[in-house]
Length: 395
Image (cartoon, rainbow, N blue to C red; front, side, top):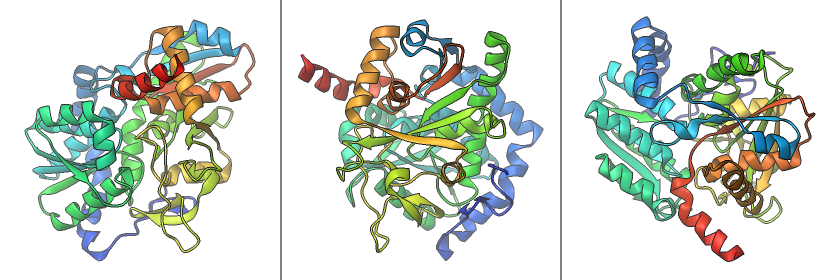
């Protein structure tokens, strides 16, 4: 069984390009040219050089002695929080901006929830001298104010979105409308493994550097390229796609995807798609999403702006349906406790999204000699207001 995309843009029965006729020119151009461009020697050299000299890769694989003692396993942290801009998102935006340049695009648009993808997009646009417009739900603009200011300082125009729930789904809707209206000069840098083919595959390929490095680093540190388990949070799922990518065919490696339960999967305030969703089409691809009986999207909820998306990418839907990955969810409170625990034990303040992956350790059992890698997808600077509010409430 293959867990990778097929020639028609599907992962099993999920994926494809369910798009309006006006979007076909945009998507066709990408579909016809992306592999030729990103697999060329010239592209690979420029991309690899920038990851090393600009992003700061490889990101460290850090052995956490104190978490290992706490959870009775050999716990390693993949430190994507140490990348330039503070998360894994820069891996994808560097790749897509190089692609856009080769396609002759002069205007870049993006959507963002937690703001990390917006900052990463604004960063690469500043470096290339390209116009940058970032769509962001109005609620996320408020709760991720530091990242909004960073985007503006980097020269991006941040456009708040007031429709719908005013979060990530609605920002994506507006970005798609923009792209339809500006097909000639605009490239849409989607930040996750969602959207019409080829986006899920393209973003996964750019994020695959995470697991590529993991294998090399584990070989050096443990003598084996293969861990027993890899844990990553999942909203749309780009960091998990990158962390899982080079282990997909190694079925002895457990892949553990952690969704946002919010206030609980039974509370109507959750973003746990695999627990609450069913098959449908959103933002151009067939996947699992939270929806009513008549197909209307249910607004998700999570304390983390980057995980309150009502679906998962088609790659992850296939991993869930085939059983290749174990999907679980953790609540806001469990997430906050995990974040405080890492901060106290290791002096690392994780992003709220990453703290979901850490919280899963409380619910899993491992043997003492098992090697477990947790992907720390971003740092917690952007979430300090949320952390402080809850920390003060505890005192």
